[in-house]
Each structure stands twice: as C-alpha cells, then as structure tokens.
Length: 202
Image (cartoon, rainbow, N blue to C red; front, side, top):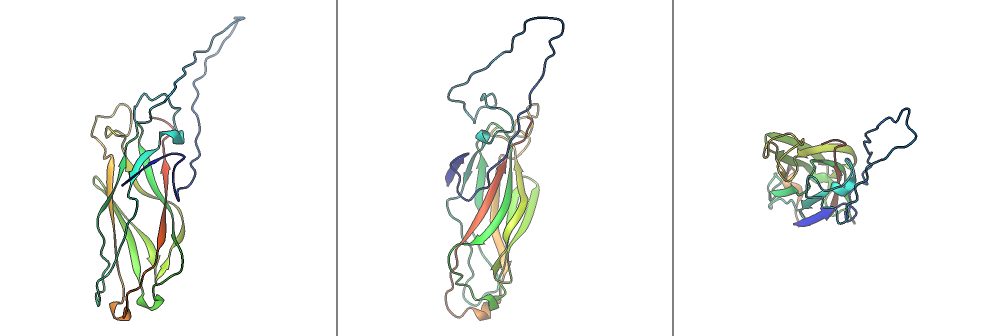
C-alpha cells in the first residue's frame, strides 16, 4: 500500500479549490480588526487541522502501489485480487477515475475481445466502471465517481456521527474475453488515473 498526500501524487489530476470566507461589515467606525489564525505544521488528519476548506492539502489517501488482473489458460473470465483505498484525512474525499491508459506497448491480441471493469464498493454503494473495451484501454474519463469516503472518523459532515460513512473502499477487476484466442501469455501495462476531491464545506 502507498500513502498519497497532495503534492506527492502520481497519475492523479490536479485539484482546484476555493476558499469560503465569512464577512463582517464595519459601518460607522474608523477602525476594525480581523482575527488571524496561524498554524505551523498543519495536520490534515485532524478535523481541526487549520487548513482552509476545499484545499487539496486535506488529501491524505492510502492506495495500492500496484494492481493486476489476469485470466487462466483457456478461460473466458477475468480474475483479480481485492484492493482497498483508505481515507486518512480529517475531511471526506470523493474518489474519481479520470483515465485508464496504456503504459508502453500493447501486448494483448485485440481479437481476444477483452472487456474489463473496475468494480468498487464503499459501504452499501457499488459502482462498476468500464476501463477496457474490445481489447483497448478506455483512455480519458470525465472524472467518473468511484466512491465517496467519510473522513478518518467515518463522517461526511462535521455534525455527523462517527462511523456513519465508510472511510475505506475496496475494488477489484472483472470482465470477459475469448480465451480460445489466447494461445500464449500476453501482457500489457496500464495506468489507472485517480482524482481526489475535497468538499468546500464540512
């Protein structure tokens, strides 16, 4: 497993963020003051970490360093282990897929009619996303939602009960192929690109 913190991500889209600012009106007075909070060593695992809402600095997610799928000789089904993604952050994080691309030469015979899905489960939520169709990687994706994870206490909002939302999701790969077309071992490498979105309010 690999711990990804914002700014240290690989194959992950850059997150935009906005800052919500509360305003006070000074009317009929010649002076005013603005409170300032300074936090050094802000902790993104702490709900009160001192980071502005919606900032990608809240992203603190553990993902697998490598995943795989395969078929056995002569079989027409795709098999894969089960993997997990864990939200370590003090804020909820939405996991999105924004691409599945070939990395290097394609060693898979297109005649195998390979079809592969990414199947993700978070609590009672299940999403299946096609990533390979007719032997070809799907390519760019429009930030398709995989799962919404609560913060490290299992909360989607600050007033929610601890454990009311999953802070961990699992995923695997499933699919089919024409196993009769696989006469020798065929290997291709891909990149699954992820995006992590932090809400503007908590």
